[in-house]
Image: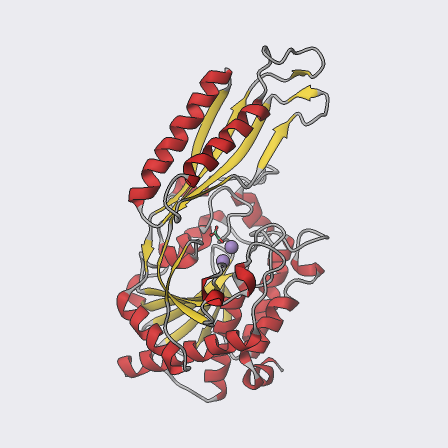
Length: 416
Ligand code: GLV
Ligand code: MN
Ligand code: MN
């Protein structure tokens, strides 16, 4: 029984549950973990996590955006404990699911103790956080926060399958997507536990950190067009090679990001070239651009420099360039009062409460616009994430669980 395992060692259960969620049913790629939103693996993961939620005493439902929700207790207001169960391509086991499992474990412990709180707790397993399938990330938490413009849903994946069709294949409907929205007056706050995805906590010998703010982020889809042609007959000076141009552009992005402060980062993580033959000069290239920084004062000039730099390269090489901004989020500060409570919770398990900034994006960025939001970071091995080598100690996950339970105790005292 899940509850017995959780009560024995909730941190171990949470880590084991994340590991169990990597079997063949839970990945859409045979060779590595890849669980994009609304794919078959995501659907199977929803079923499995719902079963665990049920065994832990939670009442489950799936909202219009495909988020799985497990509810514990009752009350006029609700504390959301959430994270995501989609993954990047060739992912590690813990980015996302660990926060969901710790939420389930916390509720199982409350349930076993027969605790009745003056508020409900809802554990959210968000369907899309990574943006692995559709061009913009965090579709599902944005639906819950009610910050999606209808145009944001007019998206298709790399195979041309639109969001409406993907929802339909999962028994959902576009017309109900926005029903996922929550009324902020019903919410007490949002808390997310997540692996740090960086090396700071490990370097300082700390198991947990309290997030102060999450860096701003921007994504673009870039399309470069040249002229496809014979690789043998097109003299170098006369060809319009879209891929060589894109390579030039990527180096410019690296240069611009590398010449700013250390929190400024720029990444080209996906590229495709057509027609894709060894003896054809590439005529069309698409690639993604991801830019982040802790403040808009740093991010905005860098974005302007990237856009101007890429346009200049396109002109110099006689290439076409279309830059489509697919995503933009400002820096997201965590709520001061909830952060202070989380710091006390970390101290209650015998640790120093270390403040830390998140360079990675999280659903908490979206929730911070809706309700007081806070994040608890958990040390991960060598700071590695978005990589199958992701690793977290069960003992650290258990400390996170105890800190979450202490935070709930504090909220109970505050709202009694
Ligand atoms: C999500 O992991 C992101 O930071 O892109
Ligand atoms: Mn991630
Ligand atoms: Mn994540």
